[in-house]
Every structure is written in C-alpha cells, then in structure tokens.
Length: 78
Image 1 (spheres, rainbow, N blue to C red):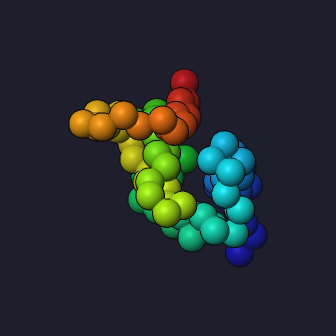
Image 2 (cartoon, rainbow, N blue to C red):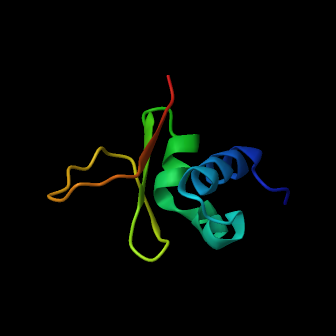
C-alpha cells in the first residue's frame, strides 16, 4: 500500500518545526489523533506538542497546561 502523502506532509512539518529527524517520529503515522484529523470531517484540529526527550504528543483538542509550553504547533482544516 502506498504511503499517505498527507501524513508524510504533516509529520514532515512537525519534525521540521521541532527540529527532529522525520524517522524519529514516523511511528506517529498510525496515531489516532492524526488519523482523526485527516479522515474525519468533524475533526478540524491537530495539536502537536513537544515533550521531554524528543517526544511528540498529538491531540485533537487544545490542551491547557499548568506549566509554560514553548513549542506547540497547530494544524487547522477549514
């Protein structure tokens, strides 16, 4: 099955923004939040947050944190 170029584009953008290698986050291609954003017309938001030790957290909601988060990248579909 060919790769989904939409997923490749989103993950490449995330890896470039956070300064990671694409290969280090390519495992997120099957993440529920990414699939919801790309395939569900009722899900217009994908939030990616940089965690500790080069980890990325994906969500379909805006999450408020108790601490200051410097790196958050939002994708909107309208």
